[in-house]
Image (cartoon, rainbow, N blue to C red; front, side):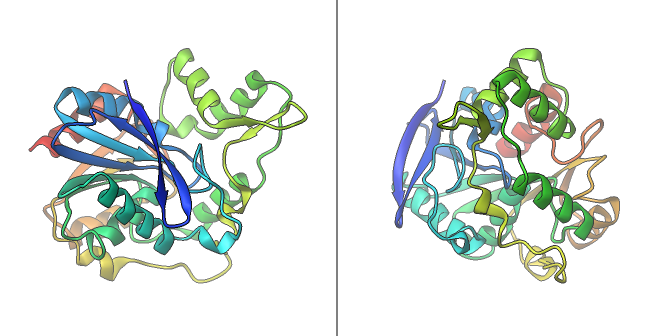
Length: 277
């Protein structure tokens, strides 16, 4: 069972889920672009039982965290500042970083810059130093054009369609996901939890930003989780990552696209083993 904190990160209130608050070893779990820290519930519960404290924030503009006034706030340098504030608030001396998609990008940057002295292990979930333009276009389109639904059950149908690549889920897990990533408007309709402005900084028509030079600079032990059907983390990108980091742990996940949900035993066990090693 987790606890919930609302902490100040610079000028914003950030919601953080906390498992096993008083444990000495810390894992920070950072979600993808349009997701929340709730995505890590199953992984966090497993790690908490193994003696870890797990911190899973909702990035600003998502979940229960405050929304920004300006779309320009929704960018990696701001998220890095908030990650630093979270580490300061919880007095994190060292930690493992588990990042899905956007959270993996933040983790790669943090592990080579502002949190280099704190991140001692890094798990990257279905993201690499570059994103194919077609995949980025797909993500921007569905995030920026999420319709409203009259009922939560109809909203859930949309969630099941969008997040089928995360992997199989039980009926209860789908119900829970729908509740966790929805909000009700004044007219009673349900829409997704996030601020639509979170994608305004992305322009798929521009040359893609690459982080290969930064990726080479990562010094801590590294694990890559790969949804084998992913359009974001292609086989070619994985091959290049393995060539750059031959000692990188690699977890291919069959039957998943972008991105594995880290919610099944087959996914949780190897990730937890890497974190514990």
